[in-house]
Every structure is written in structure tokens, then in C-alpha cells.
Amino acid sequence: MKLTLLMIGKTDEKYLLEGINRYKKRLEHYIDFRLEIIPDVKKGKNMKESLQKFKEGELILAKRAPAREFHLLDEKGKQMTSRQFAEFLQKKMASGIKELVFVIGGPYGFSDEVYEQANSKISLSKMTFSHQLARLLCMEQFYRAFTILKGEPYHHD
Image 1 (tube, one colour):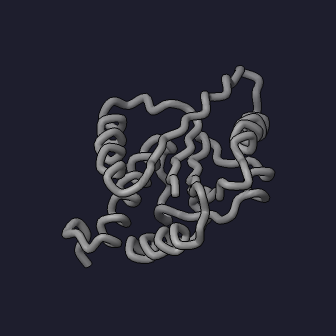
Image 2 (cartoon, rainbow, N blue to C red):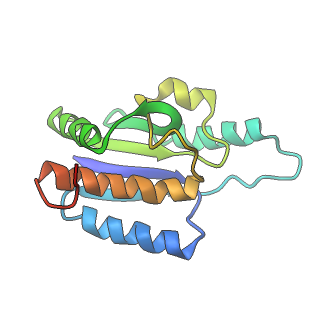
């Protein structure tokens, strides 16, 4: 199985990029992991947030395929402990899915069309994070989940 983190726009902050790359390297020991970046939608001064979300949504939905299962990282999604998230990943890996895709939207979130076609919504926290910081948090949780599944001494209850 492949694990993909699909994101709108590149990561601008050097410190976040360093952390993301560190966890990407660590994850590659456990799974075929990929970062996939959809270029930012250029927001003109007259473009409304709803139109930007719609245009980003079209780009996200263009990445859908029958072999790809999409899960949105969304503040209104289901909350899980790190152990529960590890179990979630384990069940998905055992189910025969070819590719599990976690999607982080742009600064305004997702369009209604993306919500309708997603397999689930998962929340990293009740708090709201910038979409760029959410990338690093998600990567750390992927890594944590795999260390839990392998019984390695990274996670402490």
C-alpha cells in the first residue's frame, strides 16, 4: 500500500520544511510514502474565498482514482488518539486498499464537493492550525502510528 499526503501549495517556512523532510525520510522505512503538492490557486484581489475553495476542490478531485481512498484532515473531523490512529492505518493497510491519501486543503479549507466525495474527515485537534503547520503535525502522527504498530519505543502512554 502507498500512503500519500496531498497538499495545496508548497511549504514556505524553512523550519517546517526541515521537519517534514525529516519525517518523510523516517516514514520511508515503513511504507511507500509520498508527498504530493497541488500548486496554489492564484488569488486575485477580487476572488472570494468560496471561489478559491471551489478551484482548489477541482484540483483535489482531479487526483481521485478508484484505487485511492481520500481522507480529509479537517478541524470538524473525527478525533482519535495516536493509538486509535495507528489502528485506523493498520485496518486500512489490511483491507487491500492500494493507496491511502490524506488531504490538507488550503487556508480556507475544502469545497462542498470535496467534502461530499471524501471517505472520511479526521481532525488533528480541536484547535485550528495553519495548513502548513498541519502538514508537519500529520507527518509526525504518521510516523508515531508506525512506531506504535511496530512496538518501537517512540510513543509513550
